[in-house]
Length: 234
Image (tube, rainbow, N blue to C red):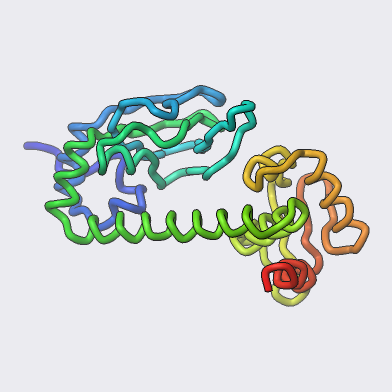
């Protein structure tokens, strides 16, 4: 008797509306790959079309300037996916992806993914909503780069990290970020240098807005940080 229980894809948020029996069948068409931290998964302009689901680990989606500077586009972690653009439109990869930690990845052929989109309307809607979020986020990034100075872009990035954090203390109006945000990662996201990020963080610390401890960054005054952002965004 065939086993109709999916083994690994049940934790993928995008696939939560796929019936278990269908998901188990899909898994028979997938490959399972392990990547070590720092390993390249695919390069920009690669001709592969598969979609990748992160079962365990964390990957980074990046591009590089002509001078070789890394620009971080997104971090993808457990239960999320990447590579959906090439899987849908058949064009070359729009960015490079590398493993930040040791990863277990499920690789699904684009043909099977496209068939699922046709078979399951809820999945098609979910991928459209996901792509809408990407467009909205990209629009915000473009506006930041076009209208804000480097210091202000660091403020905005820090505020976004705070808003996405689960460690919010509503009584004291503070957020604890763990692990401590890496200056190089912030610089890569907002298109500036590590030195600029360090200077901005030191300035925020002097003003009492943030405090760095041994293993966390505490944002003591979230309202003041929001005020700095609202002031420049109008």
